[in-house]
Image (cartoon, rainbow, N blue to C red; front, top):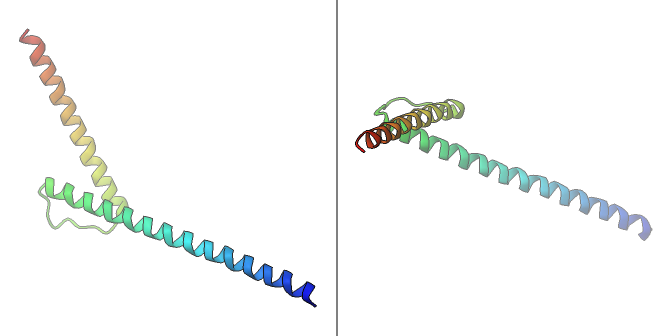
Length: 94
């Protein structure tokens, strides 16, 4: 009798442990996703503020990331052009 109870109890404990691990992993991933969405939204608001665009609101994270990417690409291009202009100006003055 005891020989059959112990393996069943062990199986139940193992299943419960696995289920607890799954729930904990899901909770951690949900929290991480929430943090990523908040950070994206904050960057989106900063970009809109920098571009002086108010009233442009979207809850679509993909659209927000797209706008952030465009802003960063534009800013990178502008700084590259300024560096080239500074380099050309410094070279011609020598």
